[in-house]
Amino acid sequence: MSEYYITTIGQDSHRFAFDDAGTGYIKLGGTDIPSEHPFVANSDGDVLLHALTNAISGYTCVNVLGGAADRICLEEGITDSSAYLKEALKDVRNAEILHVSATIECLRPKLMPHIPAMREKISSLLEIPESSVGITATTGEGLTGFGRGEGVQVFVLVSWRVFPD
Image 1 (cartoon, one colour):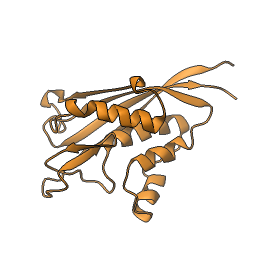
Image 2 (cartoon, rainbow, N blue to C red):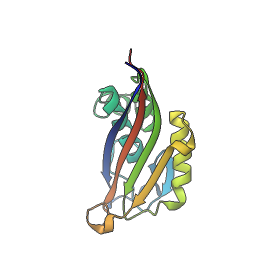
Image 3 (cartoon, rainbow, N blue to C red):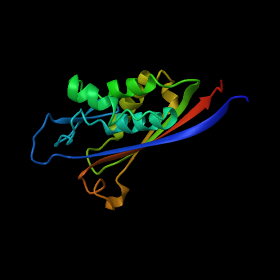
């Protein structure tokens, strides 16, 4: 059998902590984004990297979030979500990532000025061209809690070229 192509999907969401002044920023795509409220999360709460990690788990069938990520975060004290992404990449065999497409739903913070930095960071983490990372943002017309400013939700699609054994 020759190479073939598949697509996987990942999702994650976190709510904001409104009772905590936090650090003045949140992490999205490995990038510091100014924010009035931090995420409620054990890790840095980077929902973009978490959704990407879940999409990679969709290929490898190894659930890193809720598995190895808990050990890395809770036992080793590593809260940087890029560590979870790197853990997920360890299980990728016989495939390469061709393209990543992410859509982020939130009312705030405003993301447009930060999308280039997020694309650059993700392309670096995955070792793919920046032109192979697409990120869009929407408020969803306020139809969900994310669009009303209660947190952030992300969906990620990853396109793969698979090389059978």
